[in-house]
Length: 188
Image (tube, rainbow, N blue to C red):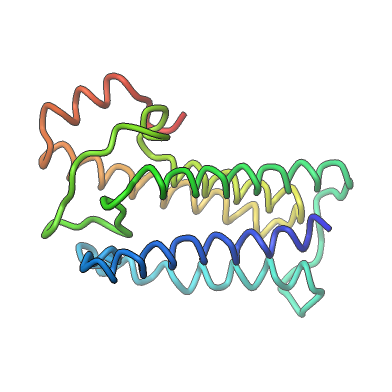
């Protein structure tokens, strides 16, 4: 059961982000700004698609690069499913808290107000925290060395993105953002 929940987590995660993006588009807001600042961001989607395939392959016994797991304990898999659920709930709370300010990527042309309420009162980057919970949860479910590598790579990529966003937010919001940084942690 946790194996199927790992797949469902990916589907729900994508559905939430795409639904939010499309809803904003109906209001005239272009929320998809991925890759507009740094074209090297387009190197990321093939790795993300491969990750999705690895999870689907592990859940449905499709051909895959490796089927070897570090460990397999049912209780650990359920803990992983719990982490995935927490990640999905954090993502949902983040999307709701963002309101009309939600963007995928940095929107230098149409920035919105700085969001400091809701989940953002506890974490400056709750979406990335949600992704980390999901990645960890899926590793606990499958414990494959490829997923472990993805945790390391994703940690680096997400932190890199956070630093890029922080640089932009400091320039755009100035003192307001610095005060927010002094009150709320980067992650949790």
